[in-house]
Amino acid sequence: MSERTPIKQERVLVTEIPGPKSQALHSRREAVVSAGVSSGLPSYIERGQGAILVDVDGNQMIDLGSGIAVASVGHAHPNVAQAIAEQAYDFNHTCFMVTPYEEYVEVAEALNELTPGTFKKATALFNSGAEAVENAVKVARHATGRSAIVVFDNAYHGRTNLTMALTAKNMPYKDKFGPFAPEIYRVPMSYPLRDGLTGDEAAKRAIESITTHIGAEHVAAMLIEPIQGEGGFIVPAPGFLPALREWTAEHDIVFIADEIQTGFCRTGQWFACEHEGVVPDLITTAKGIAAGMPLAALTGRAELMNAVHAGGLGGTYGGNPVAVSAALASIEVMRSEHLNDRALHIGEILTSRLEGMAEEFGCIAQVRGRGAMMAAELVHPSTLEPDADLAKAVVSACGAQGVITLSCGTFGNVLRFLPPLIISDELLNEGLDVVEAAFRSLIA
Ligand SMILES: *Cc1c(COP(=O)(O)O)cnc(C)c1O
Image (cartoon, rainbow, N blue to C red; front, side, top):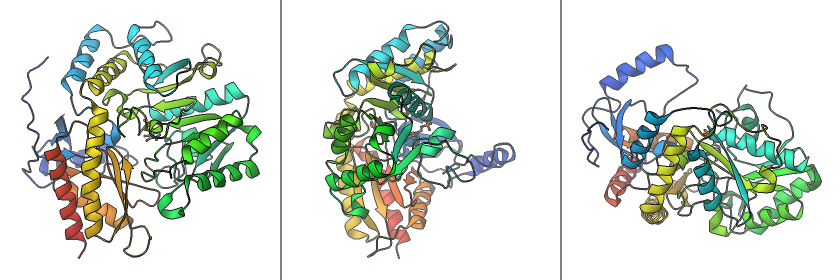
């Protein structure tokens, strides 16, 4: 391995952000990269370590987004980098469907063990979250012989054709990209801030909608994010998920938890379903699984996963050797560095800091989330009208000060925090000081 100077875990501003070198790269990019692919903060990154990203101008930025919940073990974790390098020197590809290798099997073993449920499980590996979700739908339809798929308001499941249909929000994900796949039915989600319903009431509303509009006997699967990610970090009211889990079991409907954003220690458990003791039939994972290498998985009941004929699931790159080696190293880091505990600790800091800001700034209607997946929903004070402009302005003000934050939400008005789980308290607090200052400067 090449010798690298360690990156001090501190924020350093050398130029304006983005600086001159980033701006030059951005012009080059605009000449050749599709305008359909955009970047929140066009600071071009040269290196990263832990919770710090260094751009081409030498600015050191605090990363409170982890590249959307991916770099949970931190950027360039030495154990993961080592695993990737060693595997790259061994072999990079065979295609598991042509000639298999042990690391794929090891990842399947790990996922079958870590996911909730003591029943016999099986796993299949893919490249992206959307691909895992598509395969969950394929498995559920194949195993049940039914076609309808139930999804929820505010859901995000990806950008491929089937997953666009599963995703709720038109702009930017679906606009003019149709026609979309049929047999997808959307029902109301529990959204405590905006519907005021208990978990049981919200579950009853969703179930009534399914019964009247589709008929339970036609439903292959219910697909749900235990905490909605892109849709606004919406934590359903307590009891909502267990009630749906119970109802789907009574009607032989496959319950699929999309844990692509919530999984792998992000919420202080291996999987967010565990907070309410919910055991899904199938679980999709990606993002945090392999520290940035493209990998996704579908894990669940063996009788469902094995109902599919041989050759029915797969893909050229699914479970790529380098990606699975990165996953094994990442999972080991999550265990040895107790990242579930770290996520809970980060959650306490985020909650108390954001609650403090909510007291000071009337524009924060609610602070919510679990563990290191926390958000503040921004509204026009004294009404609940979403304030997307403010969310955008805060993200941009923080970026200019070298702190990377993200927004989300059906209405674009949610400021979300997904820091690497190895971030120090000091760095996290410094990042939040910048967020607080941004609010203060924007709210006259
Ligand atoms: C990101 C995400 C996806 C899509 O994953 P990709 O790897 O971008 O295809 C699906 N579901 C959820 C909950 C996600 O957060």
